[in-house]
Length: 106
Image (tube, rainbow, N blue to C red):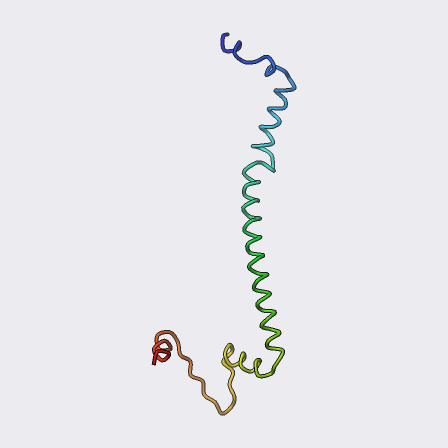
């Protein structure tokens, strides 16, 4: 009985008890509980960083596209470098890795 004397009388109020139960339910058991809010916050942060990355990539690609469209020589150079296209009377030599590094040093 001494334990009950330590608890303030306001906690015996039915409205306080109902409010506490409601808060516990919404914080732990509801669809929008704390753990799901934290997960969604982390996911939002990840998506924002991805969005920023893709926006910078789009900007880089837009600049490259304008550069390629400005002169025909740039388009031909890009096609040769990226897609290994060649003219009929040419041969292509592809240098990969250590061999290329050694040739650069010489």
